[in-house]
Image 1 (cartoon, rainbow, N blue to C red):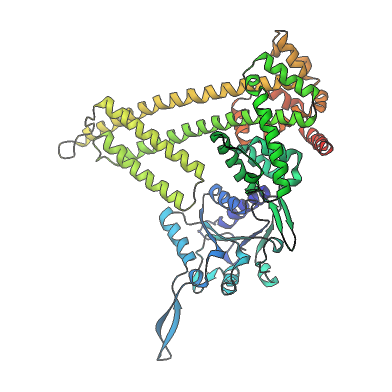
Image 2 (cartoon, rainbow, N blue to C red):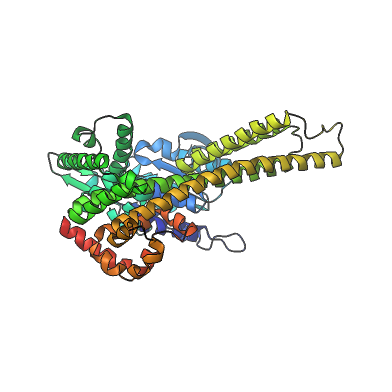
Amino acid sequence: MNIQKAREEIIRTIRAYTAQKEDGTYVIPSLRQRPLLLIGPPGIGKTAVMEQAARICQVGFVSYTMTHHTRQSALGLPYIEHRSFGGEEYAVTEYTMSEIIASVYRCMEETGVHNGLLFLDEINCVSETLAPAILQFLQNKTFGSHRLPDGWILAAAGNPPEYNKSVHEFDIATLDRLKYISVEADYSAWRSYALGEAIHGAILAYLDTHPDQFYLLKQTYASRAFATARGWEDLSCMLKEYESLDYPVDAELIIQYLQDTELAEEFALFYHLYHSREKHLPVAQMLAGEKAAMAACQNLLRENSFEEQLYLVHLILSCINGKLNEWQKCCQQMTRFSDAVDRLVRFQKQNHQFQTTTTLIHAFLEKEHGILKVRRDHGLSPDSELEEMRQALLDVQKMGYHLRETEGNLIVVSSFEQSTTEHTTSGNAALEISLRQASEEELICKAAVCEEAANDILKMLECAIQTMDPELIRLVFTGNSVKEQSSNHLEKIPDQAGKNAALVLFLSSLQQNPAAGIFFKRYPDNPCTPYWEQLDFSARENALKEFLAAAT
């Protein structure tokens, strides 16, 4: 299965294993909870989907790469204990708690979450001395005399033997105790993720016409060459940064990520062609509604090869997806700030000893940053989410500065020695009102920014659709209303779209971006909606795949 299906299977397994009866016992007893074993090529996201599944299921997550561990760190250190047996005293060997098991208990203690996922990566590449202990752990969930706590699921991952010479094959007795999931590289599954992560447009444009280059392994006795999903994503980050710094991009840079000389040289050539078109094609002007630019892009779509059309479509998608991701980030930040203010108000109600907004917000931020550290240390939130939460706390801090200036740092709650309960309650109510009013002003500003970004996206979508649709572009240049005069044209969309692969590619790619899905639900009356309602995408997608195969 592909990595997306594997993630769904992991999520289902976690939910099934953590389901409890009314008496608090687990529906599937620990004995029947087979450890998960994910086997697949390196760099396709096995670790990432484990982390994502744990976060989605809101359980703890502890991860170890087993090739970095010795028998002592995994099993524990030996020490001598004196015990009495049959009236005789003996010196026996005991073991300290395994570092891995100790980390699970530490995660439970610091997070307060009692269900979790313990993930052991590269499980089939451990040393010979550690291998017996690992087999015991997979079979019995114990390291020495220390058992994995109930509610914690054991998961592992490894590479097939063809990718790693140090792989140890599991015997049938061990495999019969595991929930075995085989994962394969699949570009179509990765593409949806890539659109949401704003992977560089040149990479997507290249892989759309060369999907067989997405994951490569060429291995001989003397050499090896490879390209992985991880390599493409890391290359995307470096390409964007090199472009921002105006550094040259060549095959020598690319081969550092795509370790195949032929592929690196081919993609370097493709990148420079893509980059030159990015500079010369008036995509930004077209998306801004400039008629001359729209006409120029229209002519390119009409008169050039599909490869040239592909360049343009991906340049358009890159601009729109960038704006969509910016809009989604803005909306998420607004939600994070609102949630932070709600927590601040609850904190204020529970703690009456704070006499000014300054002391209140300082104590609240100290508590929140502690929680943030725990979430970061135990992988309970992705880096992007942690950054959003950190920014929300900064917004709360700025709101506190504003309140301090407007209130003159006055005491809003009387001291306990001089106040009555009535006065304290009144003061806290006044403080809550003050916090709510200040946050409302900030939310209005953030909502305005989100709305402005949404309007920009709607305009860009309309211009893109008009450019890729010959009938609509004609209506625009004659000065007629598109909405009024395109109703008859919509009936012909399926026939026209069958000939216009660029339009179908554009619409189907938008559907794959998670940010676009959220946007279109919030703004259902957008320029793309009539097309999605008219087009049979299941049929069109197959036709497009055939067209791409023929083009390559």
